[in-house]
Image (cartoon, rainbow, N blue to C red; front, side, top):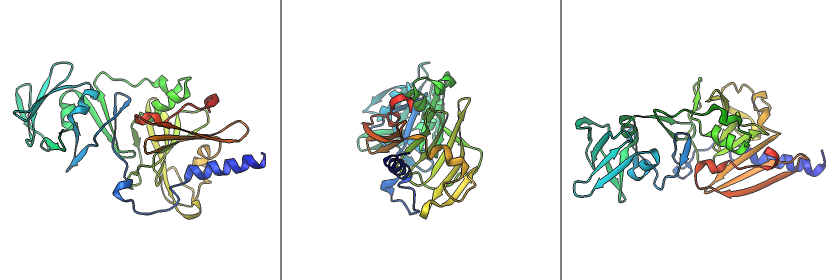
Length: 298
């Protein structure tokens, strides 16, 4: 490999692990925001959800993205929410009492009003109206599925590699081992082996997770956190080595492409066939915009 290509490769690898090379406490400003995915599609939220005890509350405006309709009555400070089957729930600000199709029940937390927006407990509302809710801790994502939704497993093998990778990150992550329990930070990065969408490494600037996808299920198979000299100081799952030479990490070190989310911009890094480093940035409107197309399906 030519000297400039070796330098480019070193820079590429260094940038890929920048931000997770030291262990330190994160301020709240560095915590990852919540992201919502409905039936396989990421949606945009103009207001972040609020946590009350163990319940997550979202602004009622977000309900239209889920497929629900709502009517707000300012005089009674109540909202009526309906699904496509015409089931309806009536909720009132500062009250824990809900009324579904004429039958009353208590919610875990009351409806809230904050900064001129009405927030409702997302799990209670959606599950009451026939949806399934799953909260993923790895990336702080809320997955909502209607009862008739099925993930198209062929999407991961799409000839459009960018579309396939967007489908892969839209799957909720699960693990069969006890994950590392660090807070999720906002510095999201996805690293894919060149030409593939069925496996990737997700990093938040501190913790890295290796993900394999099979039959529409995205499984975290290993995690690690590095310290000085790229030594692995915390690990879980099938990551067994003490540094980045671990065989499990090899597919993500060399022939690869990375996508980094920085504020409202996606930064894509990839190497061409001659080992030259290329990078470009793209505005991000919704979370899936972090994944961009690269020349020759890199």
